[in-house]
Image 1 (tube, rainbow, N blue to C red):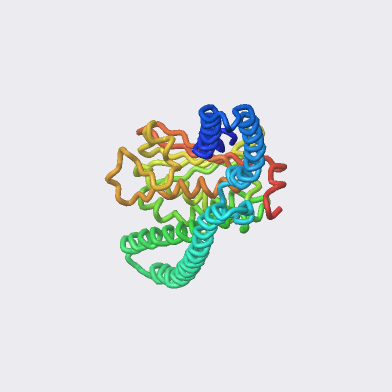
Image 2: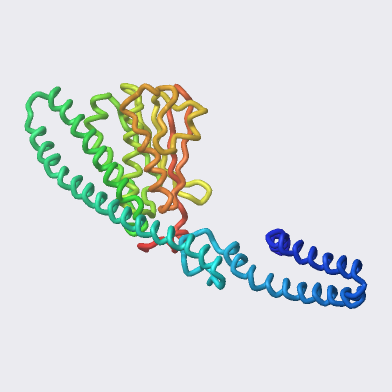
Length: 335
């Protein structure tokens, strides 16, 4: 800061030094002025100027030191108090835009919250006619037509469900209730939802659960498993199989969903949980949204579930959920 202060005041310092040299030069030319007396005057002037410079350094740099040390945020209380008119000008140039941005941010947040609430309300309203539509479809006698309608109904239902959980995800930590869950009953509900789709593709699901219970949140764990099963069915080849198994490894319970579909290329594997990423090998697939695995990964984080993928292109994909130990849930709200 000293170097910056001297650089800022260099013109004033040079002016003072020039005036002192000018006084000595005039005393040298004019014997009546007294060179020794002028030299003494110049010495006192330089000393006084040095003391004055030190005083001004501490006074003028205090504001800028506090300004440089504050965190880069919108907290106006952390701004230093200005003393001089120039410091007040700087303070105003900082506080006024921040206050304006705060107002705009609050208005935008309010607008986003209103849109979110309206969308959630719309999704819930749409679910009622969807339920009625499913009951009507169940009364159709033509089995082929019924299967096709159920398939399309399921696609709409899953998209709405995904959108509903996506809007709730920023507040997921307020919605957690950790309890001991029975994996078999949870998987049964999710498999039954996809049963018509599996039957259409001739896909069988083999479930083996040596470890039958886990600690987690029922609603959000079901959502994660729903995304994994949906992807597994979608990318499985016809008349293949999906294997679901649980186990215990390295002190953690795990749940695996394995399909024998087209698999994932090695270059794509690190990116499959990225938002909006779809396969580079099937980039023309317009039905892929790139959101399922991203949302599953996002929901798994507050549940402290590790989710990883292993795949060989052309041989299928295995997604593994590794659940935390019981004592790690102490800090999770809802216990």
